[in-house]
Image (cartoon, rainbow, N blue to C red; front, side):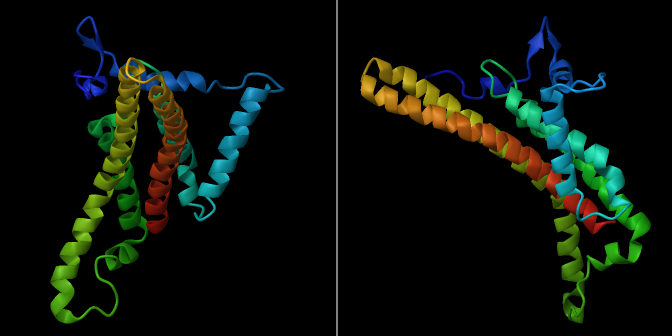
Length: 226
């Protein structure tokens, strides 16, 4: 119980070399490209889920926004599969690293903002100053809206990092408590183990929900700028 709780979040290395890049690339193996005329059940389910998600997420977009379909679907598949693989024992979850999440959030956010200023310049500038604002409040509101705009990628990254990290810490703590309680009270240890199983099931749901929320917010930012 005295071990470092955050040791599992340290970037892994092999022979002194970081292997984070290999871990990040690994989920792409889980989504094979169909090469047969008739797909098997696994690929059929995979394609059905992708079509269902893309149809729901792109329903609010116009033709210009739908050009981001491949990017959004790749994003939700990558984050979802990475989160799920991170729940395996002795594994590493890249999405617990704030630097990686910022590396995803900032370029996507910047792309939506640049798209808005390029194709909807007046509408994008109008977000900084709501209609009917009293004249004395104009400078303050412009500053507030500018700050809120630049906080968006930080909110994306911190939300994903905090939710995934909190879930892993809870599993670690309850798992350690279960092992410690075995020698004290088997009944209490069994109850704690049941809680651990329920929490693990919840974390599977959180892993998928956070991937969907991250992608959905990027989609909403894109919708506001196209």
